[in-house]
Length: 255
Image (cartoon, rainbow, N blue to C red; front, top):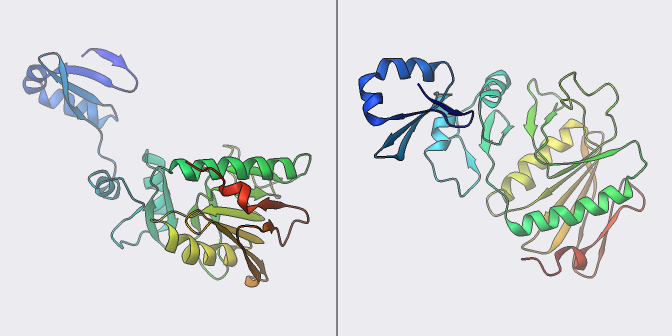
């Protein structure tokens, strides 16, 4: 067997594969890839099988944010799947969602918001993090947490909430989600509920289509205040005094 590199594993000809099928199946079973060529061109890749759930998503078009067919799994099952998968995914109310690649507009807004937040929290004990960044949200009166990747989060409880492997296990004070057509309902309903029940203090929902920002503040696991900021407004945090974003500048000249 000829080793090429880590990403491709072993590259063999179709003839070699036919002659030594058992040997190469054993190699794949040991979590290696086998790339098959014919007439000098790569025609197929044999990869280790992970789970039925990942297979479901791999065979579907990846243009949208997908849910795994309503199938419920436990938190432990999700973590086992997640650790073995290369896909970005979230776990909400016992269901798995695969995250699609963001649009250019989404990334431009994310970059502008990060500059605003980073400048505000500079020198502060609170730290600003961007997706992909897993957070395990422990909801009040729920046995299993949700695992999500907010577009932006502000963590003020890093002390004693970072594991030896560098995984954050605390609760953000503030989270930001940038809506897309495929995530609109999930972000505005399911995620709002998760953030409310897990002890998050403030939730910003940025809507590129409507060019506005909705800000919710939570107190004692209930919605305390909420406000929508439109063009011409400056969105003001309800929790952090002086944290703001000019709506017009945020959405100006997006690609």
